[in-house]
Image (cartoon, rainbow, N blue to C red; front, top):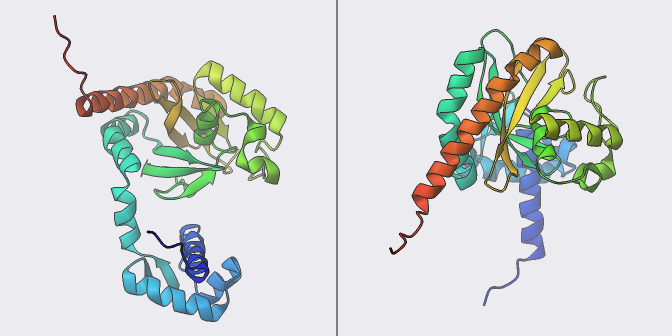
Length: 264
């Protein structure tokens, strides 16, 4: 018989997750004071939990504070879904980078945000808001919009609807009605654009990677510094990359689960 978890244990686990979330949200090292302010956890508790995280390799101490540990990278890399997607997509992401010389991203949706699984950074343009393991706003990114458009979920049903659609720049869509119209256009075109909606001075073009039923399981994009008219030039190449990854995922799926031979 499995005994229910002790309430104190559940509370401790939640606090540890809060601390890890705070560290994951910032590239910089955070002090005990920073972590306490961001999570609302008492400093004494933060100090104790951080000690345990460092001891287990889930966090590391640096010159200015604490950062995520490499142990978490091992766990993330071992996750079956992300590993399968990254492995299948990798050669096509590199080809896309070679063809465009732009930053290439692979992402999946996680509720009200997107989770970046992989990134090939361009030398010419700095794209600071995307990194493997990082997150972006689902309503303000081309990756997020294309994942929403092909998920079959209406904007009003989404988790972030209660909190509204926060503006990241002056170009961010903040109205559910406008987002709904945008998603309809994305479904017609098969591609989504983000022109300075998530970050000033940058554009993004994204296409869905779909399963056999047509639902988006991930999305691929290129990001650079240019206008919409220039961004549209890359849409065909990004969509072709998404289709290639779909075919590779299908091929791998069939190899793992071959159809039984039929008797003649």
